[in-house]
Image 1 (cartoon, rainbow, N blue to C red):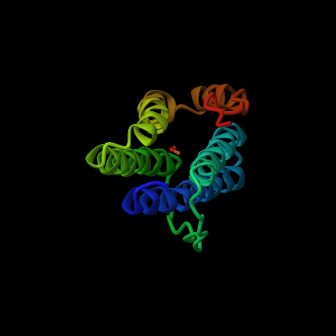
Image 2 (cartoon, helix red, strand yellow; image 1 turned 30 degrees about the horizontal axis):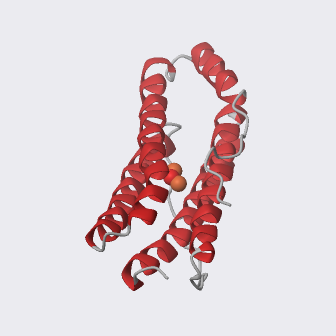
Length: 171
Ligand code: FEO
């Protein structure tokens, strides 16, 4: 059995990751409404990845004999006034999720829960990549977003993103 505090934080993270999926699906819906199907696709794939993250936390808890409690998922409530707004909100959200992962890691470290630390190593690396990706989208938009032709090209680039299952597989 896991330490109660560690298990609680892992359970909360199941909800946080499902919320991330919901949030990015909301971004995707916004871009669909705006006619930017590539941006919509990019965030729809991102939502699928976040669902996978939630399922990994859920599976890890169950693999360790812990009960999983599913709480209500918050409603995404961001209001966007420009195409760039979701990109900034996404970057800020990933920074927040990184903090959450680090908090769980710290709790596991405090009770010498090396197994959970090893499980979380994948997420620590993943968060680095997700922050880089989110920041990269902002940089690209800053460079190309104000030119209609360049924006069309960027949207086409983002339309090519395809979903792939996470590299972390729990037995
Ligand atoms: Fe599950 Fe975007 O972190």
